[in-house]
Length: 183
Image (cartoon, rainbow, N blue to C red; front, side, top):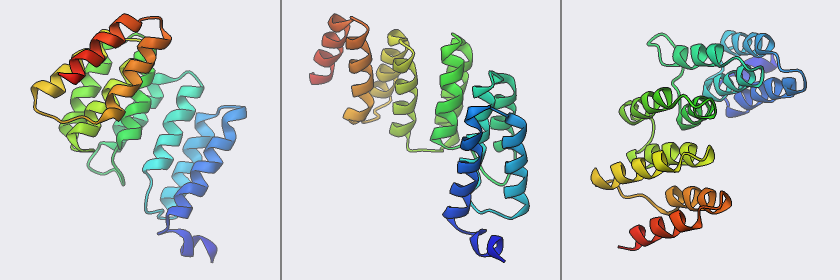
């Protein structure tokens, strides 16, 4: 049947993500998790985007606790998949919006240790999350840590910070950061 032909494809994973996102009108983490279980039963190869959609559904329902449980379940040895940069970004962003700097810091360190993405991408993700919520001091701290570690960041890491600073009326901070970058 059809599910057998789709099981190993990216299309199958995308189909389940679509089903979960369709629930956004009436966020239901329970329905999203039911779709995840069904995807697992069918042996869908790439479950990370499906898990990410479940995490987002939990957050849409204002259930950060459950979103974190789903995220943590991905990182268990018996899990069929691992968190990716998107997974980390979603959860870090939720904690950052709540002002839970300690959790963002812990997740940031976890991301860098995980090897999920190249070190530069990990730092860029952390910087983007901090800039998105207006925590410019933390964004700059992470940029400085990357520089101090010898990590070469591209313009994609700096752009969100400069843009967010400018939009927040902190053009002077953005200018200082740009000056640092040119040195």
